[in-house]
Image (cartoon, rainbow, N blue to C red):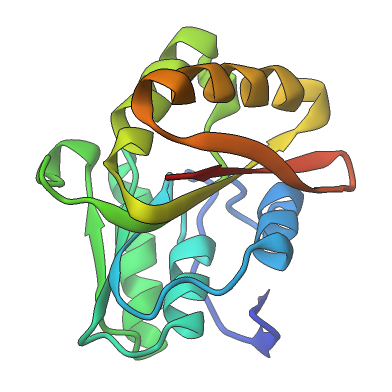
Length: 184
C-alpha cells in the first residue's frame, strides 16, 4: 500500500471499510490536508484499518509531544490499526472505541472520512459529539462525496458553527469529493 509517498506493507480485512485498498475519498483527503500539528491530541475519526491515523503519525513523527487517537466502533478496525502502527514502529497511536475517549480530551486536528451512509441524523449526532472538542486554533478536515451530500453537510456544519464557535468552508474538490475544513 502507498501512504504518505511510501510503499508500506499493511494488514487490511474485508470486515472494515475499504478493506482491500486505500479508498478514493481517503486518498483525496490525505492529499489535501496540511501536515498535522507537531503536538497535541490528533483524531482519526472512523479509523478503519488505519490509513489516516498512520499518515498523521508519519507526518508528525515525534510521539512525545503528540498522540494520535484512532477511533472506530469496529473492534476489528481498531485491531488492524494497532497492528499496522506496531509493524511500522509508530508509537503514540492509541486505538479506542468512541466511549473510551475521555470527554475532557480536546483535539488540535481531526481528520476523517466520516461514515456518511449511517444516515443524516446519526452523522449529525456523530459530528456534534466530536467537532465541539476541537481545541482553540484546532481544525477538522472531512472528506465527503459530492453526490452523497457534501455541500449540504457543509451548510449544516456552518449553521452549527454559530452555536459552537467554529467556521466551515470547502478547501478542495477532486474526483467527486469535497474536503471540508472546520476551524475553531
